[in-house]
Image (cartoon, rainbow, N blue to C red; front, side, top):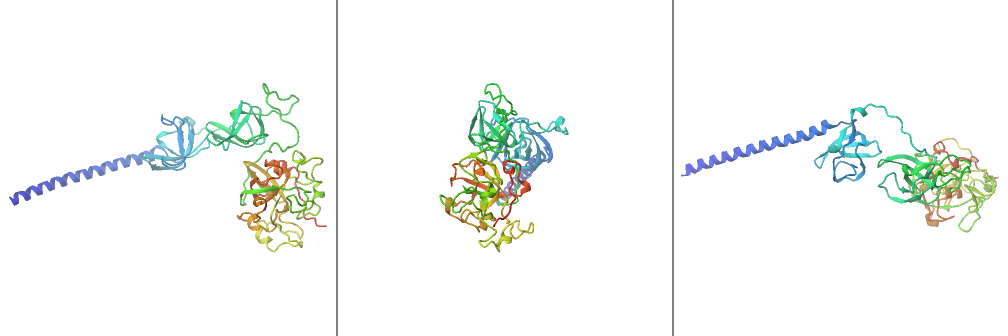
Length: 442
C-alpha cells in the first residue's frame, strides 16, 4: 500500500508541476505579447517632430482633448483642444494609466501632454505647406472699442480665466499686449479708459478709426480717436520687455512730487532732490498732483521727465562724497568711469507694474525715509522702513496716473518693480521728455 500511495503521490506531483509550468509559460507569453503591443503602439504611431491633429471621439468630454501639465489622468489640466486643432510633437512617449502620452505644442498656444487615443497624424495636404503670416485685427498701441453689447474682461487670455468684469458697448482702450490664441478666439490685453482692464476676445472688439471731423455715433459708426496729447485716463502702448535685474513684488508705493513741502506726509522739502538743489526750477515749476493736464501739471510743459520716482539708496553721503559701498552694491557700477559729481542712481530707468499695467520712469531722488537700504534696492530683501505701510518707493503724479493708483496719495497702492536698461525701455509718454541732467549742488 505504501508503494502504491507513493506512486500516486508522485503521479499527482508531476501532473500539478506540468500544469503550473504551462500556466507560467502562458502567462509570460501573454505579458510579453501585451507589453510588445503597447510599446509598438507608442513607438509606431508618432515620433517627435510629427504634426498631429485632434480627432475627438469622446462623448464624455464634448469640449475636446484635455492638455495636461504632465502625463497621467490625475495631472492638472492646462487647457482643452477642440476637434481639428493641430500641433507639433515635442516630447514622449510616456505610459501612464494604461495610455500613451505625448507632449504637444499646439498651434493655439497651449502646450502640454495629451493621450494619443485622440491624436492623428496631420493630413498630408497640410504637411510641408508654407504658412502665411496671420493677419490680426490690431497691433500693440492701437485703440480699440467694444463693438458688441459688452465684452468680458479676463485675467488672462482664456475663456476659462478669472472674470474681472466687463466693458459696455463703445468703451475704448489701448491695446498693450497680444495677440494670444486660446479657445478658438484671439485675445488682446486692453487698458480701457474707464473701469476694469484685462484680456478681451477680439470678436467683441473693433479698431477705432483715425480722427475725423465726424463725432462717434453709437448706433452706426465706431468711436473716433482723439488727437489730444497723452492723457492720464488712458494707459499708453506697452512693449513687453525683459530685464536682467531682480523683480521686487508687491511693494507699497506712495506719491511725491516736485515742490512738495515738508510735512503732511513728506519727510523732505521736495523743492530740491538728493542730487539737485534746484530741482523745482530745473523741472520747470511745481508738479501739482491735483491739477493735471494729462500726464503734465496744469500751466506748463516740464523741462524734465514727469515720470520720475525715488528709491531708498543714495550713492553719495551727506558730505557730498561717494559712499564707500557704492561700487560694491550698485550692479552697474563697473559699466563706466563715473565723474566726481555723477550719480550712479540719478536718471536710471525702472519698470513698474500694477494690476497688469506697465509703466516706466527715471530715478530722480532718494527715499522714502531711508537712503542706504541697498539690501532691498539691489537685493531681495523687503524695505527697511516701517513707515507708510512699509513704503519702498515714491512715484510722481504722472506715474501714479499711468499705474492707475487709488487716491491722490494712498499708501495702499502696491507695485512690482525692477531696474531696466535704457535701451530696453519702449516708446511711450515716459520717453517724450527724458532727464539727462546730473548733480547740481551750487
